[in-house]
Length: 102
Image (tube, rainbow, N blue to C red; front, side, top):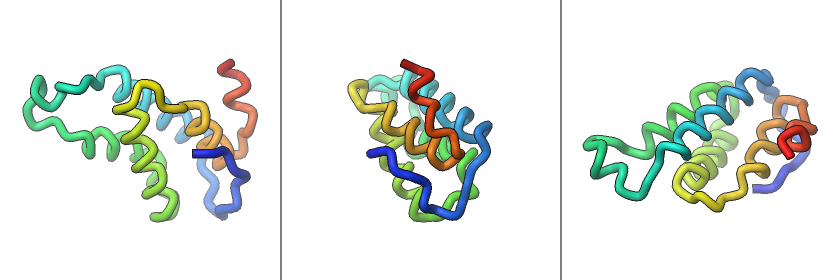
């Protein structure tokens, strides 16, 4: 996912951005390949839905984009999380958020 300027009319609050990043981080930190065996009934779709909850005001198209990205971020340790944070930051009007992380 690449950072792009916010061309969508929907802006999100910075608190929603922060909550989403936090939730994705928690899910990624607690994920392991056998989680579905260790936690019977666990489903990645539930984690992804929890991560997306702060973004529910976004369009269905953006939510679908983020759904795929978040699932990858949770299950792939080497995934580029900075691109995700940049994309969220662009939607909240805070394009410099990733620069603060590095």
